Amino acid sequence: QVQLQESGPGVVRPSETLSLTCTVSGDFVTTSGYYCTWIRQLPDKSLEWIGYIYSNGNTNYNPSLKSRLDISVDTSKNQFSLRLLSVTAADTAVYFCAREAGYPARRFDSWGQGTRVTVSS
Amino acid sequence: DIQMTQSPSSLSATVGDRVTITCRASQAIGNYLAWFQQKPGKAPKSLIYAASSLHTGVPSKFSGSGSGTDFTLTISSLQPEDFATYYCLQYDRYPYTFGQGTNLEIK
Image (cartoon, rainbow over all chains, first blue to last red; front, side, top):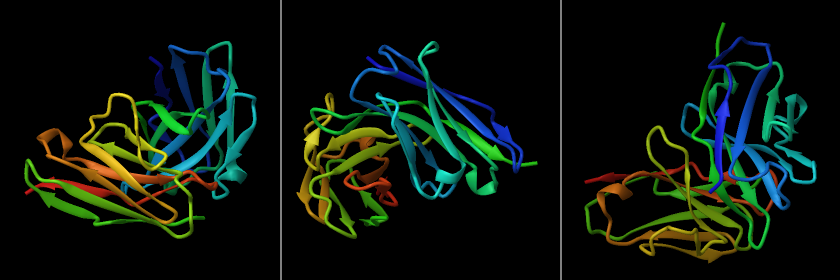
């Protein structure tokens, strides 16, 4: 069974870079056909899809974050990561990593437990 | 972006009840609709994908239907562990978008 675990700082200062990591266990982060995805839950409990890195290295980002966002993979650590530049208070959220299977049907089959990030000076 | 509108936003029900939650998309999304259950302090749990297919291990008391723009999640014979917040997600077009959630409470 695949398990995902987020890690990162609980607090980030405004204008700095948020870096989060999702460690994958029970499978390879580059297993074919999977979208390694980041989703966040804002303080009002709304959920926002951030973006993914596909098993072939392709990325797809939410246009609302695209100019500040980078998602990458570290195969040596079996992890994928999120970097969000120039954060503001609006980036305060619980960040989840998740894995979306591409076939035989698109579906989210694994989620991390989430990590809370507060943007504050 | 595709807007997903869930109704109701909150719902009170009794153990044993059957409830239905609706999700409406601002444009047709085929059957690219998923449902999730979330309990306080936990990650969302996948219940249904492709509008009506149950994830492995999800009890058959949960069922989904719909296509195009209108979708429903039905939960039969409510048990205490079913009281949670439920979200729909469209994954037909990027960016994926979620409904605002339905908080299912014990009456």
